[in-house]
Length: 220
Image 1 (cartoon, one colour):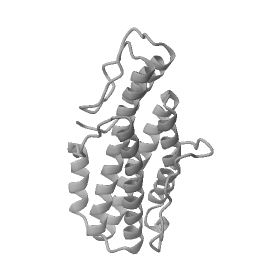
Image 2 (cartoon, rainbow, N blue to C red):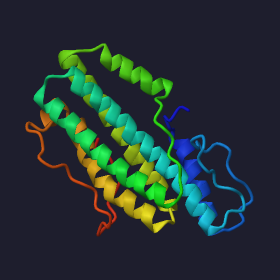
Image 3 (tube, rainbow, N blue to C red):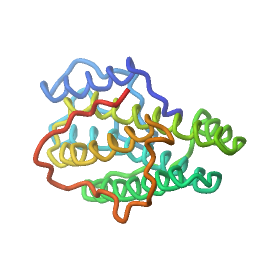
């Protein structure tokens, strides 16, 4: 399934989740919401517990896909680039994505939600293929461009779905992971000049109980 989202499609999904949260018997379920195959889709007569399960399946699978995709792109950078800043950034993204995905998987397991195995869409595979054909500065610049777009898309997705989420555990997970994504996106937006010159000894690990709800806005 193609996971490249449009604002309109995501807005429809958020609208449906919000409507279900406000009323136990909404009149219809939008057919345009992009739901991963095997994931539960909000139904027209969902109980609160069913809604939590449905929103968790949708949001966790999309986040899982983002993390797996960013890790795959970063692994490509580790194979192709010799620029210290690129290598250090790629290592950081792999580490952060792995930690975040593990927390996400733990929550999915607690709720009996199945996460789909990562399978790159045709668009994502195209990006990986294009990167693999580049080298040197061309690769480095293209890698940061792609990562900036990817992380902006993830932040945009989380900003759109968060207002409709009613599960406290899922809200805590989103709020804990947004700052890490924001930090990585800010580096990607700055390119090679903003990349870390030294490999971080320990990447920031998202906390399970954030004290405040961070904004999911992306750096330009």
